[in-house]
Image 1 (tube, one colour):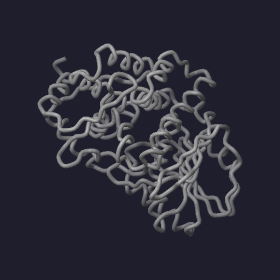
Image 2 (tube, rainbow, N blue to C red):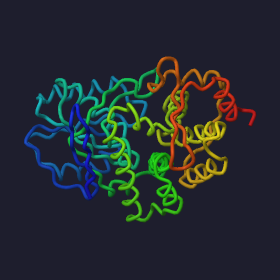
Image 3 (cartoon, helix red, strand yellow):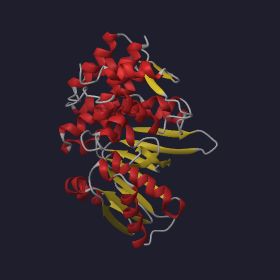
Image 4 (spheres, rainbow, N blue to C red):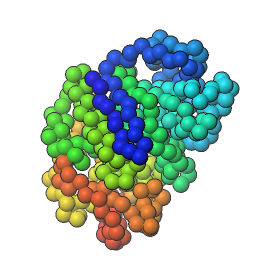
Amino acid sequence: MIVPIELVPPKPVTYDITIDRLPHLTFQTKVVVVTNPTVATLHLDTLLAHIEAPELHVVTVPDGEQYKTLDTVEHILNACFEHKLDRKSLLIAFGGGVIGDMTGFTASLYQRGIDFVQIPTTLLSQVDASVGGKTGVNNTYGKNLIGAFYQPKAVYIDPAFLKTLPKREFAAGIAEIVKMAVMFDKDYFAFLADADLSDEEVLKETIRRSVELKAWVVNQDEKEAGIRAVLNYGHTFGHVVENETHYKTYLHGEAVAIGMVMANALAVKLGLMTEEEAEHIKILLERSSLPTDYVIKNADTFYEHFFLDKKSANNSIKFILPEGIGGYRIVTDLDASLVKDVLKQFGDAR
């Protein structure tokens, strides 16, 4: 099945997201595949057997969010120079969201921009990170603060790659799926509440519905000027959790799950959501083997970290909150003491 991305002017861009077995890919230019040792060991031979190109090279970078840095991007860039890529050359991101983000960002930089293709191998990257053109890296100040909106030429989603995915990585992808259902589709949330994702057909349907939701959002708002910001539900809190734990304790989806629970607590405080609805979301996350608990040691410090998030502006924090299940509200200019009261619910004294 194919889900089209059709971005609106001033810069019309179209490409397809293909959800199926990986096809044979033929390119008339030099190709560099960017991957990590884990994915390379499991799947690189399969990928290379599906690619035909005049020159084909592989760059392997370390595995993990802590390596999503400018140093790693420079390593990929150096490989591009060493292999004498030109403006018609192509990069292929073969891995999870970290590989996709760094490869896309490198493609945007090399000779002011070359093409790249996404072949995501984790559930999180298949349903979310590979779709929409967000690229970038982390630094000491926060997550994804350096980057660009840069669309791929194509995305190929093969659910077969998920068969070797560790359970924890699989669960991290479910967090992004739940996020989209809570924000946009109450019926989809009900579907997920009963879904057995170990069933291959159910999993494929879940990927399809998630990708269609993400595509629907991105087609309206490529650069997060409006509705696309809603996809950051759980991320404002989750990015602080990741930053406080130096990107070593939680996978991105795990931090987002914790962030959703925190955002829900704020939504309950504001009367946007009932405690029962918040509990239904927490139950689904926990049933999916995701963490929902985090101890905030200092509410003031946690609050100040919000301002390092790229979604804050003019000294104001933008909170993406659920309005029930299937609806959303973007809230700004909340009183700091109100937000800190919610953060203290996650403190040591619980």
